[in-house]
Picture 1: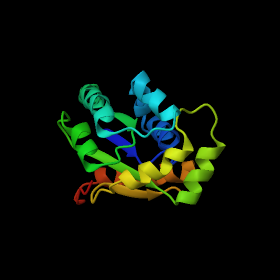
Picture 2: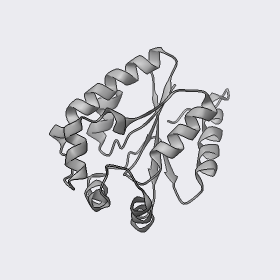
Picture 3: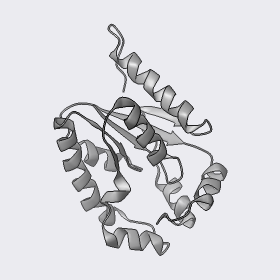
Picture 4: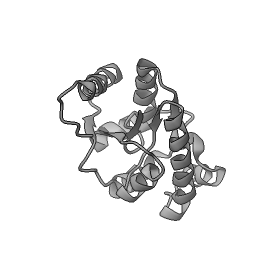
Length: 171
């Protein structure tokens, strides 16, 4: 099972993803850890990444996803803002990916980003990400107003429902 927890910066992808992975007893990976040094430097300097910047990063993650799938699954936190990015990420997977898009208001996101320390993402880039975001018409859209524990429980319940016999699988 591959779960990708996605959304703009500040939605809690890493927090939700790591807690969910622990609950599911799956390895957790943060897509940010796979960015090149030049991509991280560009974001630290307040410049948004473009599609050319993201292409090698996404292709590398797609290879990792295929490997993690063979090894029994994983949870990945990754922005996956555009449909083309999600297509690349899923390009080497042999089974369905469960997509969880975390979503929240701009005000809440700014508050969260401004309270972070030690993260390479500059909160002034949020509007760029919000303008780039293409919400999928598949997967699960999860509001981030609840606590991380509540969000993880909600996702876990939905995953259990998928495993029940005679249920329509819609992920």
